Length: 57
Image (spheres, rainbow, N blue to C red):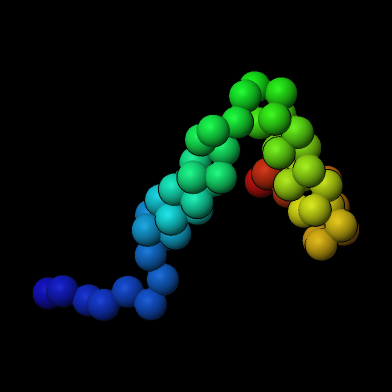
C-alpha cells in the first residue's frame, strides 16, 4: 500500500544542502566560516536562542 507524503524530510534536507552548497561553492575557507557565523547570528535573532542549544535535542 502506497501513501502520499505531505512532508518529506529527506527531500527538504537535500534541498537545503543543495542551496547552501550553491551559495558557498566559490568561497574560500574564511568566507565559508563567515557565512556560517552570519547565518548562526540570523538564526539567533529570528528564533531568540543559540543555534547550539536548538540542536541539543
